[in-house]
Image (cartoon, rainbow, N blue to C red; front, side):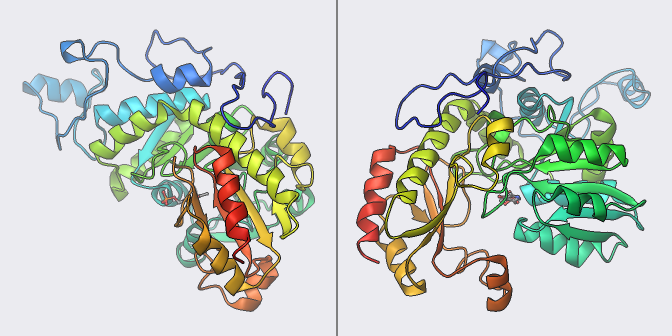
Length: 424
Ligand SMILES: *Cc1c(COP(=O)(O)O)cnc(C)c1O
């Protein structure tokens, strides 16, 4: 990783990293909020109002469906844009606003919108920004439901899509058409954790007038600042690392006001809003984002290194390992490689199931990014309804395991894996 940005990726438990942030440029926060703070400070303080009722420290949950006007002049002033205030619960809530400002500060973006889920963030964004007759480019290693939305719904709305391999810049260049509006990709991707060379892709995209949207769920703004690397919008399933406690669903989109406004307006119509309590849980979760990511990063790297040296492991995918195809890109643009490690055991499906059933720390569940480690076999979970030939084409074998490290002690995660491997 770049010397001024990330520490040693070789830290095991508890070792302190000295993660440094690049200075953030534009953002719309509270008028007096400093813009040059690191991501640990922003995680805690950004977006929070210091002046709360009764001098409370934390932001309240505004559990209200609507906001009243004290007289008719307040209504007309608001309609004429002379005053800024909340109007109705589907358009905003002060609890959301704090979360939106906090994420804007962390991403270095002008504005953020909160959604009920990551899928809602993606579908609302696509619907707002892709007119009929336009063209979209996506990468193949893409969240299953996003792929399904593109295939099942966008096609019906007259949007054409081209799928390219992650990190294949030439394929991207030749996929661009005069009507191409958006390039959308995850980075890192799932399950192979491919890292997109965001500066190179955005440079090419912008030369052709194409907007770049990065689903940064696996990276978080602590590990990668997609907007600083040129992306137009950055999207999250905040259900994962941002929330961080396996206790809520949420989605976010961050970027410049001119792109955010049509998406915010589409959300007001489509209505996929988060409720105030979930927004508050997210606000609380993000306060520890930076410190949690340090542990996710160090646990991920320790586990990946250990597995790579284990005789029963056929292959490990982790961008922090020199053996990963995108290691060089990760070193250049990321501050850490995250908590998800994908690996293939030297066994069959039954052996892989025995392994998973013998683990005692992770829960077998879809998702990632929470304090509890989660484990899954992609073949029995997210790729269950993909036909075997198609699965094999994608390289999803029956002994492929995805381990999403929580924030437990790495020594315990590794000891648990080692004993489970003896049960294969
Ligand atoms: C989970 C996930 C989503 C979907 O988010 P939800 O919050 O579950 O709707 C989208 N993209 C990625 C990369 C994800 O991991």
